[in-house]
Image 1 (tube, rainbow, N blue to C red):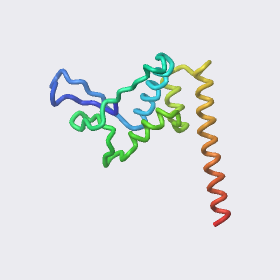
Image 2 (tube, rainbow, N blue to C red):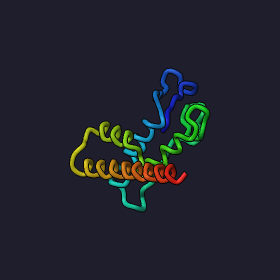
Image 3 (tube, rainbow, N blue to C red):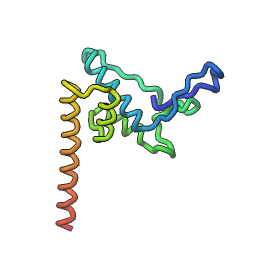
Image 4 (spheres, helix red, strand yellow):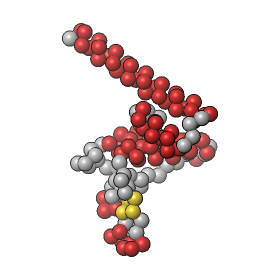
Length: 131
């Protein structure tokens, strides 16, 4: 979930999750995606995100003025494994496990991000040279 505050309905028994951001959400969702892929068979891999437009509780993926489409883009990156290098580092750090298969996956992901950056730089250089 991007965030949550149900104080309006629960009063003193409310649950409040603060400091939500698209970056933190992406790190969290990536962990859930990885656990789902690892722990469930292909036909049972479902994820439920709360919520598209729970504006009153502060849980919405729907674009807004503060973050624009950032939550949707974070969702796409987490689901497709195309997170930027900083998100990958944050993810590995929060897990506290940077060895074995986790290290291998992390290195693969960092390599893919760097490869995309290299291709982007090459494209920009070609564009600059031809224009």
